[in-house]
Image (cartoon, one colour):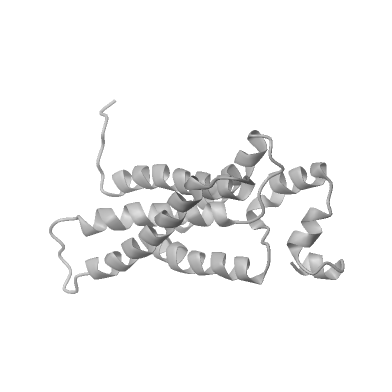
Length: 180
């Protein structure tokens, strides 16, 4: 957004629409998870990072969370490129991934039996489940009207977050499905 304003464009979207297809593909492949359409998109994603990221960072290792964010962000940004689109603008794929992981983790904690704390922290997990369900509803709505690269990015981010979230939760609770 700052770069767009410095180059006399009203928004980063206006700047991106002025670029050639090859330049858009290059940007999506290199910095796609970090580009935002404007102040609202940036603050929405920062809000998700503040809620989901802070909570998951407390539950898991910080470096693990950063690796997850980068991995899901890039996979979600590259998915539209793989299907022939010019790519997506935004970090929403990574934030949808984080909220899917948050949802799976929080549901697992709600279902956990035998809490030994004085304050029953499951009430906090209920709030996270509600937040995750709201984002899951958005994902279902997006799936019903997939029409562009941004929709593919949102859905793929949520799907990767769901799959990895299930794996992380199983590891977190030391549960093995297959004994190989």
